[in-house]
Length: 434
Image (cartoon, rainbow, N blue to C red; front, top):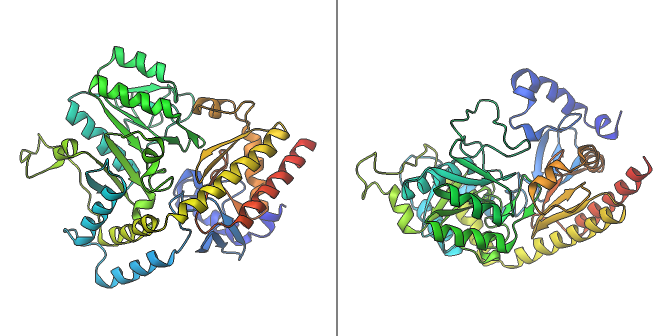
């Protein structure tokens, strides 16, 4: 029995019960890892406490939503105040205006914004808006880019890229054009053959392993969209407000037509999504201008822009805008982690690191991946699993089991990073002996 198993007996019991009522015992498949997931009882800062009393350093960090760590006091205090006043009313309120104004100030390309309940919804409505504006059907998406569970975009997430996932139809994805990431020439050839409504891209391919887009690739996409009259959509659900106050588009210096957001927008505490762009596009959602239901691009949701989410989101984004030292801290830690772990992996001929800012991906591949296909098709899954489990045995949790990644929060310290580097060095030495 491993150290993890011997110290997590209650988690094992809970997982056995969970399997009776939840498919696979979890509410999201990526939350499962062997031999079973631990069950959290408390979270604070960069730490998690499980039901057996074990403490972990958390780099999963709420799927990346917790840029300030768990239970960030200003956000928690805003939530406490708002609970006394109202949580969800289903009518307009001042917080939604304040959050929308804050997003516009931080991301100037977003002149108007609508709120949704998830990143999946945000991408779904962004695609619909692009199609409504251009009156075209085809959408370009890239191999290994994850845009949520919306049918049109839930394709080519993992190899084989041409295969349709269970429950989807080929009809649902017939207008989706799948192209390799960071390959501008492939995009140029594709748009010659098909009328494109929009191109959606992750500036950093998150689920694909934290693979950054090359600046010239994003600039080229911008130029192509301008040339053919298509809309460029940046999926910044992960990178929005994490790489900078203005997200990836500020770092890369490339302005999309539509931006989708999530995670951090809700204060890191609530289910949330958002999409926004120039007035010219967003006005298609305006019920005052388009009173005919069939002429208007639809967006809605019972819990969208609720008072609790928007008050928490406004509080956190205001903090991020006010405190630039936050980005200095998390980006410095991210750079050290990428550099030092990368050097360890390369020295032992095990793999490479990728990422940008506070995002770090670990790849057990023979070459450093610049596209997601390389990361996904050439990786040693067994080494990835063993690395994840070695971290777990050392009370460190990464995201995910077969695709180790690290999200760094402002709560993480240099000691946390040095400990993670040390544990990785131990793993590298041990795996080479096997």
